[in-house]
Amino acid sequence: MSSPSQSSATPTPSATSATTPPGTQAPTTPAPGGSAPAFGPGHFQPVWPFATLAAAQAWQREYRSGGHQPWHLDADQTALSFTQGYLGFRDIDRVSSHKVSGAHAHIGVAGSGPEGGTAAVVHLVRYGTGRDAPWEVVGTDDTTFSLTMPGYGSLVRSPLLTGGRITGVDEGIRVQVRQPSSAAPLGTSCCTPAGGNSQPWKQSVSFSGARDPVLTVVATTGGHVAEVERFTITAVRTR
Image 1: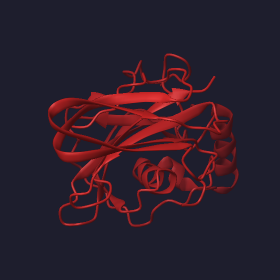
Image 2 (image 1 turned 60 degrees about the vertical axis):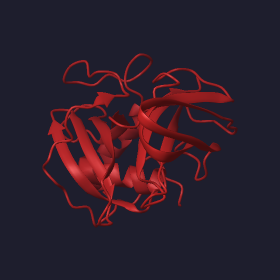
Image 3 (image 1 turned 90 degrees about the horizontal axis):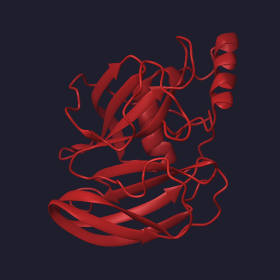
């Protein structure tokens, strides 16, 4: 996997959008507070692709002057680029659901195989102001697999205790800590056995090398029909 920068990741050209909304789901991110999403402590965290508002605004200026990387205005492409480029889940390569409402988008992503159901619903918001404000990943909407610990936007250090709930059979949960400026995970922990109906799970992961202000904690499960069949993320802060 190549290292995703603030605005240089290459979108996946094979995305195909669907129009079925993802349904009612419990968000791992804060409830939106109006039409202009707020970022910072107690609000949304900028997960990817822009680490700061200044970086998003710099892209806007480049886009206005020369049409630079227009995929930042496409929620589907941004969700797939996040999943494949940043998280490294190359087999999750299509959009399974699409719902955009104002400054918020909820995009389901899935594998292309015959048994590939929705792996996650990625929550994105517009970062900045103007009709050309780019899409920013802020979290996932979760149903049968959640990551609720550590709390969204909380300050963390290593080792990190993670946890949530899962519904499934013979699941094995892998947890990684990532940052946009690094190609490799900062830490990985595998694998916690889990299963049942909305059963709690917990797992500790150690990490090192954190230099970005916002880190991504991602939990995955799979192994039945694909290596990664479901995933959930949360955002935490280092300062």
